[in-house]
Length: 256
View (cartoon, rainbow, N blue to C red):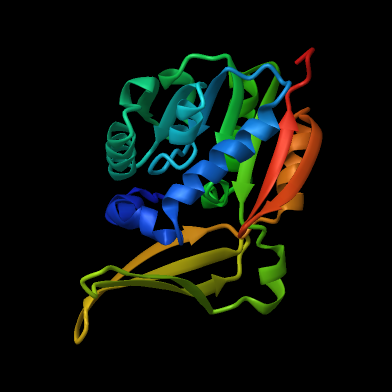
């Protein structure tokens, strides 16, 4: 079972920074948060897998890390490069198009750290795909290297299975509005599949246009991911909340 998300992310790439209340603040916060995680761990070279529009890659490059950023979506990569160029950082980041499975053929290890945030891992809908991806990360890390995963912890959702989730709203000085919300559908498996229907409403009243885009997730819990990490010999696992995500940290053993 495969879950091709490229059409979804290609379609929403131009709007993605508007999915945050303040994207510039988000960039700064991401950089400082990751630098705190990497402190005293000898991190210089970082792979940002599923980099999206550059939310982690750009601030890391700004802080002086050597950054390789990959994404399967051409639209997301294009927007990330535009964002990096606007900040004078395009030559500080190596951008490559690659799925997780393609990473060993596209990038050269070893990395001091790998970052995979933005709830990307739950797009993998089979046990095999999840295990294979985390194994690829393991093999691309140097011994003692750090893995940082950011994902929605779906465990609290599984009992009540919410249908409606609010998004964000922005309004510019000319009265143009940008509003998002989500309608979720739940399908019992195995595996269980959660379908996110994203609605984007934009324009100026009374003329507003609505865009609908759909993408699938496997509603993973953080505990499920941690079990796989332990099975693959990662160590020093920890987690902490970061807005709507849970951030999971793991380390490849020095003897790995």
